[in-house]
Every structure is written in structure tokens, then in C-alpha cells.
Image 1 (cartoon, rainbow, N blue to C red):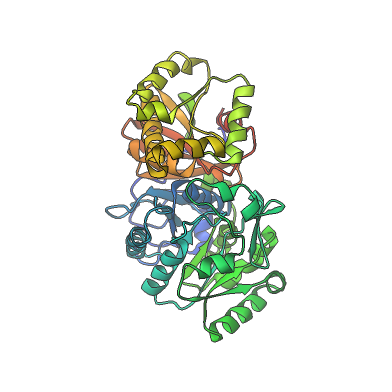
Image 2: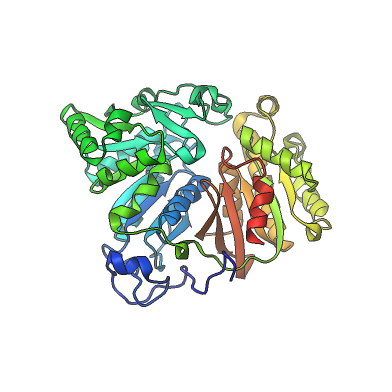
Length: 463
């Protein structure tokens, strides 16, 4: 049996069994008689709200690695989940929408998760703390705190496995400050300040404080003592330093009784243990992979630019789309699919709008920021749908906004989370209207994540 095969399907309706004890839950197979049914009160350990689709799989990936059985939903479900899992990640497309809309969508997700009996809520944002000048991390955090009637929470985007660390409240990407990492040129969420206390304070009416690395290094008791001190001083949200996974593992136990945790995906490695769950390979097994292979890339991050170049250097076919031709009225999606059709049988193909920051700004200057982004998203989503119609059953999508558009175009509502390709990026499996029987293997890659050979490596992993 390959590493992606499994005989059970966690997306099938749950049985009538009640909640299992944590010890039994660790070894019970998905769909087995000892699994608990989501929807019964107290059955769901973690209810997670992610502000974009790639970030949702990033979080789900870390929870699965730590032993949790996880399903990711695309948007807020209209009814009970009907799956036997330990955590649910509700993926929203709320990172760059107006703050009021982000708040409304997040509160709707919270209400649904509470109806499923979620014991702890986790608001997940990007490890580069992406946010517009108006929010949305602060406004959403405040709204969730109010809804949960909690006066204190923490915030840390630290994800050391992907070189995102927080020291003295400053966010580093690798060896440089966030504001010097390339993120200062992000077309939608430029990050020009690496001081997270200052960034978050500008977005919230609550006082923002800091739990620094010296406190975290002393462990759970010291962190709890510092949290109590900050609350006594009137602080509502505390940025937490973390420069290693050990820091996150020391922080985790101190968050056990917190109604709301806000973070990137890094701290997720430490939370399953609070519910008596330990790592297990069983949690990440997917059905065997079949079908043709393709990559759709809309991210313009430095990492994705390198991945596009590496894919082409390895001799794989790739085609760039031109936003100006889309704007002129050309049916670019149809042209792309005509190009891809004879090539797919030979191996993976890449369709991309990825470009460097100067090219992106030039196009935005001619079309407008929002219009340029919307044109590319719609086209790539149509391409993704067409590729699946041509028989693609292994699809890599790069970029948060692109992932959201593609998943919605494919009619995907739930994804089972599988094995990790690179830190923060797992393979997933989903049923969709174009592949209702066999389903689709899908990975949604955050623009900044993955090694240079990510695109090729991803397909090798499913072989």
C-alpha cells in the first residue's frame, strides 16, 4: 500500500457512536466504531477559522502531522459536517476583503463551529501577518473575542519550519525583518513594518502587549504568569516570541484553557497534545492517486517565481498568461486549454501568471490593482476547471487568492488533509462535481512556501 492509500474515508457520514476518550481516539480508525461523531456536543476538539484557502491547508497540515484527523471546508457549511474528525478548518477568503465583511464571515464560521461542539477556537492568519492597512487581523480578533466573551488571547505568526520567527515582537523571514523580505512589495498586502505589537495595535482598540522569548524559554508556568500579569495591566492581546519549534511546544500547554487562540499555523503543532492526541501516520493517508497532472500558479512571491523557473529548467512545458490580453477580450482560458490538451499525456504542465514585482506593478498601473487581480483569478479558475475536465486528477495551485478562486470554480466544499510535501503544504483529496467518483488530489500552496523544486517534487510524492 502506498503512503497515500487508505481504506477508510473520513468524509463519509459519521456513525451513531458517541465521543471516544482521547486515549481511544488516538488509535481508532476513521469511520470505525470508536470514532466520535462531529455534531455531538463536545465532540470536536478544535474549530479553526482561516482567512485564506492556502492558509487553511497550512494549518490543517500541522494538525494532521501532530495526529489529528482533519477536514477542511470551503466556506461555512450549510449543515452539520457529518465526518468523524478531531478538528475542522473553515477556509474563508477574507484576508483582503473590507474589515466588516471579514468580521461577518468569521462570526458566521464561529457560530457554525460552536454548533458542532468545538471546544477551542483557532483564528489562523498568514505567517507573514498579511493584512491591509485597515485590518483584518485586528478587527476579526476583536469580534471573535467579543463573541466568545473572552478578555485575553495571544497572537503569534511564528512558523520556524518555514523560517518565520518572532523575536522581541519583531517578525523575521529567514535572517531578515519582514519589512525587508520582499513582503514590502506584496501587491495586495504590503508589509512595511516588522514590529507586530505596533502593527496589531493599529488595528485594535484593545491594548497589545508582548510575551518575550525569555518568558517562553521558562515554559508553561512562566507563560501563564506573564499572561496573568498582562491581563492585570489591561492588555487584551499578547504577541508571543518564538524562534524554534521548542518554543511553540513550550507555549502550547499554556494555551490549553484559552477559548480563542490566534496565530499562524506554527503553534498548531503544540495543541493536539492538550487533547491527549499523539502523532500517527493514520491521520494523513489518502486514496491512491490517478490521472493527469498540472500546476496553476497565480502567486507572484519570490519563492513561487523560483519554483516556476525550476519547473521550466527541468524541461516541463509551461505557458504564461498575459493579463493585458485577458483585458482586451481574448479567450485566454480556451487558448491555454488548447495548448495543454496534447501535452498532458506526456507529464505535468504549468500555467502561470507569476511575475516579478515590477511587471506586476506595471500591469496594475494600466488596469488597476483590483481589476488586474480579478481578471487573472477568473482566468486561472477557468483554466483549473478546464484541466480537470481534460482528466487532470493531480492539481497543484500556487497562491492564496488563486487557490480560493480555483477551489470555488471546481465546486469543492470539503477536503481531506493528507501528507506534507513541504512545511505548511500538504496534499489533500476532495470530491468535486467534475470528479464525483474518484475525486481529485489537490495541493494549495501559499506563495511564499516550498522549496525551489516544489512543483516537480509534489507529483513525485504521489507516484
